[in-house]
Length: 200
Ligand SMILES: Cc1cc2nc3c(=O)[nH]c(=O)nc-3n(C[C@H](O)[C@H](O)[C@H](O)COP(=O)(O)OP(=O)(O)OC[C@H]3O[C@@H](n4cnc5c(N)ncnc54)[C@H](O)[C@@H]3O)c2cc1C
Image (cartoon, rainbow, N blue to C red; front, side):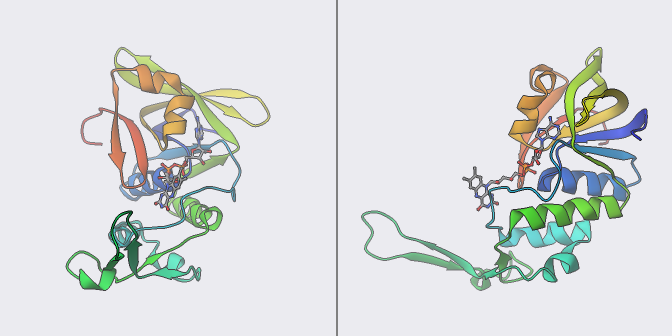
């Protein structure tokens, strides 16, 4: 059963939502993550970058990803119009930037489910089949959220902060986009909307 109060509410259980909620839970916050679909679900965006190794390490998920058997990518090759030769970058040519000289090409359904399960494992309260419908404000501060279960029931939960893990999630909860008390920033995994609470 959904609780009445959390420290942080996260809208969306894609990589950004799972990473943000895991990080917050690891720091002792009580976090609820609402994902409107049920995983595993199809998603586009399979080709990961080698710069993500440090993030996987800080989340504590490296071993789980290693064990999944995804194909390895060792670089990238650009074929440009009007250029008669390809331009290739091999990750192992830049050891100062990448802890490992390769990245994964993932099946997003399995990858996203693994990250979401890991968030659960570190204490995030995950609600699949639930959507964030509305953000409520006390003055300029976010003070609560209306969430909807897939049986159609709605619930009001209080929280001091929230994050929406995708442009879609921001659009889905229009008050997030309109309000001056939320701002958007580009992250490695997508667009994040969050409150301006100090220290978060
Ligand atoms: C054609 C295409 C190709 C791409 N290729 C790559 C690639 O090769 N490599 C790469 O790194 N990236 C790629 N991307 C980008 C990649 O897909 C995204 O950057 C990534 O999925 C963003 O992750 P996210 O967690 O922010 O959002 P998402 O993965 O989109 O997850 C958001 C989640 O929020 C849920 N949600 C939305 N609204 C609500 C709500 N109101 N309440 C509750 N839940 C909600 C959704 O169901 C979804 O599960 C590609 C994108 C496109 C369009």
